[in-house]
Length: 371
Image 1 (cartoon, helix red, strand yellow):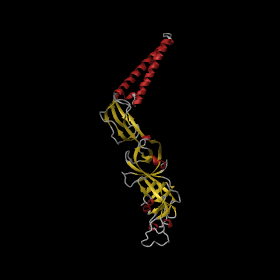
Image 2: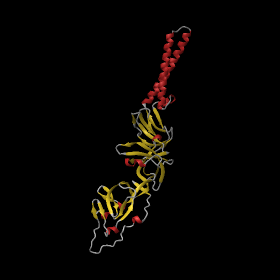
Image 3: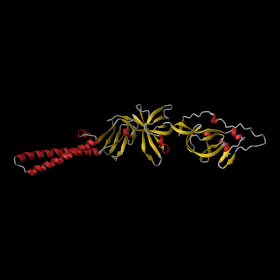
Image 4: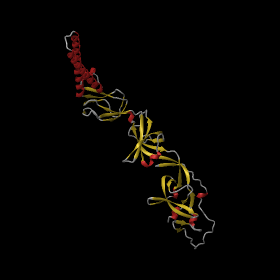
């Protein structure tokens, strides 16, 4: 994680080595560098450390965080369509390739399907049955007016006609769901699969000769790439640094030197339990299709400035897994205090806990107290 620290540490008297006007001990007297009094390190008068230590007060400073995360380009799911075949069969001709751009209604593939032939046959039978039952009903109606037919015969004819009409409607609906009409029955077994939307083919699962047995499996995916998403996964500990409409600078390795400024479009309400990360998406217009799904990017989330305690990194002492500083608790008396670092960059560090405003810490030479 990188941070931008707007730190202006003035070169005032607090950073000037702390000295005393007392005379130095004569040669051979050998004054001790410091002594331990309980948990305190006391630097006595005449100690050479008094010229080597520098002490400064901890101050609140406006800190602007910049969270750098890897990201990838994705197609907008709201503009992505999975193409399904309405019938089973065998692919006789494939008209497109992976990555090709297509327009709505463009032919994608030709499928030789027994299901289609059966659907045409069912519709033709339903048409014939509907015509037959209509003629029978008309005859009964004429005979009934001359009392040559019983009422029950008319009722039976009406029932037969209603059933035939229902079967005909079902067969017509089946043809419409396939995407054909009865007028196209001369083609019989051949179905022309058409593009449902305009876009680019980002996934292709068929080839000429392939047999399609599952009508619920997508044969290809078409995405409109006029707008794309840049998706980053934010670690759980940094989730508070990201919010909707937050400014983001996105750089693309494919286009060196090009950085785009965008805004956070979406912050997921769900944390992935395996990776402990939250998905964050930024939308960019892509009229030239220069940004392609799968490309890598780097997203720099710019958080609003916040007041934070800041110290020079020269004040920090690292021991195993702990970080500490020497705090002045009395004149030339210091105590070691563990601190937690929130962020660090260059010569400055943001303190999360362990210090308060006004605390005076050793910012130079503290390692000599650690000896």
